[in-house]
Length: 251
Image 1 (spheres, one colour):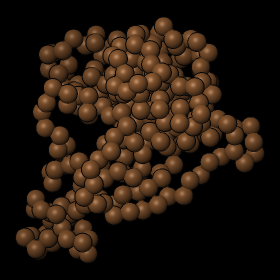
Image 2 (tube, one colour):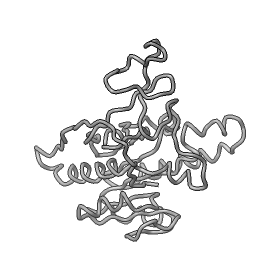
Image 3 (cartoon, one colour):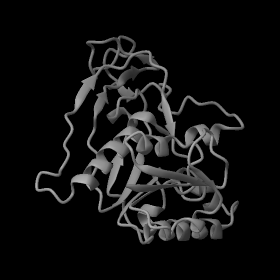
């Protein structure tokens, strides 16, 4: 199978497909972060080269809901969002049978259509929260592979195991505990501090999610003509550990 991974400089989603024996090409205006099959340039140059599958990660700078306040306050040209939406439509309308478009919560949902699925890294083995929306064409919804249970925080501190969501001794249970994962502060904000490459790190797709994309979608395409072709993976559950977050970028 020939797979194009659009708007990816890391090569890691590309590499997950290649590890399964597929011919995969990543494409981005930036050079790839890892050696591999990569086209540095405009995706339009290679979009019509007869691909079986497209996984697209259109830049979210002018699409994400979290950044639209800049446009609403008149601090950013609204045409930038219109151009970004036109690019999303270009990818969605590409003459490729199987297409997946990935983005955070964004205006794609209101301006084009709602996503087919919203997934979280904690559904795929990571102690982390990050809503990821998927718009799918001729592809199944992803099945969770390893669910990581959240930490519980109340009054700014982690609630000990066994206390459930009843709160903590500080408030005598008056405040219901909040679910948090390893990449979040007790208040729910992302722990990642300001830096020059913060945008790059924030755009990364977690390794477990990238693996699920490659394994489940390629399996679906390979077995689509068989009556028993649907792939359902068993869901596992695990308690969060003091884990270092593993990433596979799709940025």
